[in-house]
Image 1 (cartoon, rainbow, N blue to C red):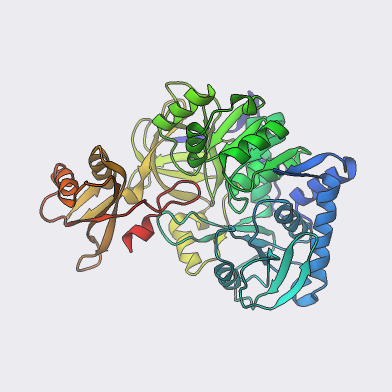
Image 2: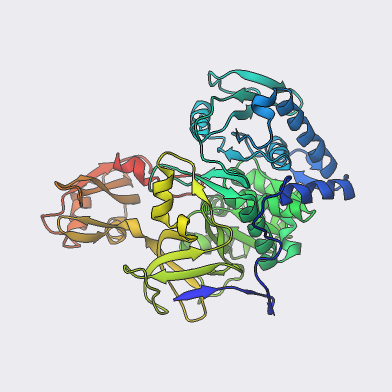
Length: 511
């Protein structure tokens, strides 16, 4: 079944207007922000826990970054040469992105939690010739070309590899790494602008003009919908340096956002902390993304704040795909309906669309898709994902109802072939999780059977209370009648490794 959104507020649209094939310099986003800086230089653009920056101050900070780049000579400052940012949330990050976008320099974005030396290595492999880092930070061993005391930045030179950048590229962002090594997905100026335009149209311009984000701006969820969109509309983005309840509540009280971007880990911490419903009085819609928001957590947040949380389903490769802004009991588990100009299909193993209610892989067509991967083996991975054909095979498993609402049931990779049979690791995890002493569990394949077509066995990794034994975990695994041909090993950890969005980092458990 396919579902495409081509209508907004009941009015037919003619396609992705304002999205053009030919790239521009500066990017449309940078041009829009700089135009607002001319029209309303004193209006607040960015707000943080302790201070706010006006559009005029953002423009001046971008000029300082531009001067930083130009002072290093043509080897770095030449128009179109790619760079990289590894900066925390705040004015320096946004000003650096604005400076790059205004001058046609595509940039790879790395989260501040990534060690600077690793960010430099990945940026260099991706073809970046320069890297902006915090002034006071861990050294990388690369030459420091220039510093900005005012913005707290240092510029390092990289010996760029072959890369894979093309004219019109704007940003590259790391995928989550929840199932395989992170990849740098590169998105064009046209793709990012399309997401800005269509996200604002679907949530409403007034909501989109006033946001609060609590996750890293290096990721598309917080960056494009949460920060680039309000700035393109002349609005205000409140940016928390980290998803800490106290900082988020204080920022919400001071800035009065209409739209809050969070992840399940934040909502969990808010539900467990001392409630402060008054702080969120202005919030019209809470959004969650990055990992499933389970019903018990959803209910806990509702008890604490009297509010329900919406869903923003998307990915690094596709940006926002579907939205569920309002809550109902019937759609509690739904990821929402496709954003306009996104065509969502659920397909079977043969690639053919399935009828409503049947479970298959979620496939997306969108004008906002990533163009390619810049990481090693990027071309092969892009072909496997379908990006070379203008679609994206998400790896998510789900179904569509008759009204076009998307429901997700897990990941394709959760079905593992081992011992001649296909094992649903979700069922295995559910059986183990039912033990009252088990806090977290993940089942992952390990090794390869002779021939390389199947996994050698399953590894069940458990975080549990003292006293839970390996024998008890294995007994619950055997309750699924896996058979002797499916080897199972059990490992215990104090806690399972998770991404900032709350996803279990399964590759670490399989190693």
